[in-house]
Image (cartoon, rainbow, N blue to C red):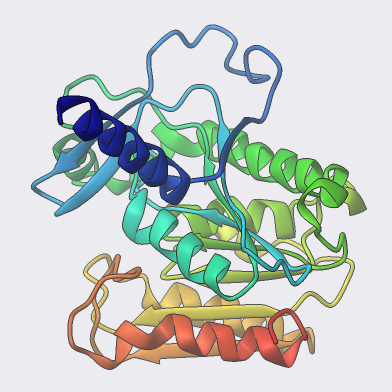
Amino acid sequence: MKKYFYSVLLVLVASFQVTAQDEVISLYEGKAPGSEDWNWQEAQMYSDLFKTEVVYNVANPKLLVFKPKNPNGTSIIIAPGGGFQTLSINREGIDLAKELASKGITAFVLKYRLIHSKTNDPAQELIDNLQDRDAHYKRTSALQKMAGNDCKTAINYVREHASEFSIDTQKVGVIGFSAGATVILESVLHQTSAENLPNFAASLYGGPTEELLNADLPSAKLPLFIAAASDDQLGLAPKSIQLYNKWLAGNYPVELHVYANGGHGFGMGTQNLPVDTWYLRFEDWLKQYKHLK
């Protein structure tokens, strides 16, 4: 009986691991360029403050791969938010990846580089740091470029290994939440080559810098999906509207959803509000561009 119990337990553990992700990929061989002297260890914890799991102290960027049973050729790289100090790994990463994979999209959750947390409560540390936003921006400005490079490297990786994942190299998208929106916009507005420019993008309650908002539009007419809430506690809804106006002024394809309520960081959470179904609107948008059947 005991042997049977342990056999069942092993099967359950294995099933959980497959459900968690199908593969974990390191983006760089050895240390990531620009942060070679970082020696802290990545960690994860449940944050009572944020009411979700958070990852922190990321020094070695990775991709968590979620493979659909029947891939349709589309892939999406997901950049969770967390103020460049944490990653809301479930609500703004894994939960969406599972939803997309269930619809045939190969999803990659990006663990990009973060600033070093000096305490064992990175969520509270972030809240404290945000009391002086200008100082926090200065503290994270160099890191934002690094994280943007992580996203570009991820796009390159996905395209270079497209055949392994049954992916169409012309159907590679990115979606970012909050700080993650800044990360994906680095790949869109500060492109360094055609190989790391995505084919479509989505920004969720992002707060792009003035530098990004004033950057030239991408060389290709890249479709953009934007969603935010008017009652965003960080007051970032106007940034989404500015981003929308930037795309509109260039006659680039863009769709904007601003919900009355939802706050900042709604992600894949449930609040019994219309904002809960934003991802269905995103899927409708994907269908328009033949990225989802």
